[in-house]
Length: 306
Image 1 (cartoon, rainbow, N blue to C red):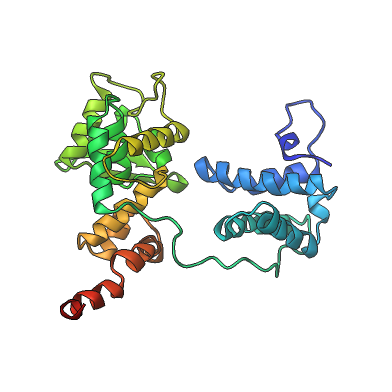
Image 2: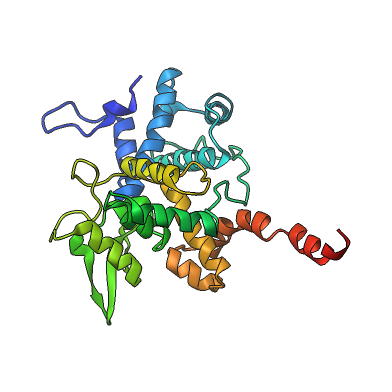
């Protein structure tokens, strides 16, 4: 069977593309940028699973897709949200095949999706932890550390938005210093820079006039892997105990800290660039269960008797 790596577009004069190659190309053509990259990664996992089980994806039945879901859950132990996302990619692929007339119906129809809890499994940092991380980044000899933490935690950028930002993306708009950010779906947003964040970015770019804002240790553009390593080193240097950091945890912190500060949910949604306010609420719900749990209110109310 054909593995996904063999489905790359054929050069001119090569053997004509087969049905599976055309189907994969037609589906992925609906996406671009990072969305295409992530969708391609999820589709690759499914097609390679089919190959390992001597199954042509275009001949799969509903039971085969069910077995793929069980494999993802029970063998690979993926989280329910990961399994649900990858099943959505498989369903989208087969839906495109039906539209294009390759299949009469989708084998992914009626496949049971795993339950995804409403609460986000990721917790943002507490106010004290975030302050300690900012202090460690400000005191770090690596001039990009403070800018990295500020862009992720104080601007709420996704890691690919922060690492993909260039010096030429800085500018002014209506008296505000702004950063032009290319987000999901190649949507462009102008993010205002508070003075502290502006100073952190200026420190990172020094006297450079072009190129990426964030650099790795070799002077090249920082990627998400380098960003994760830098955050974990900063967590080790912080004066308070930190969880195992990853970049998206600071985006959670951005949302939860603003809500804790009393910012209106709608304004937080706009700042985080969430299409659905339920996404913003999901980020905060886990923190609600801990930091603002009714147990603390009851204990304080009954403090005189305890």
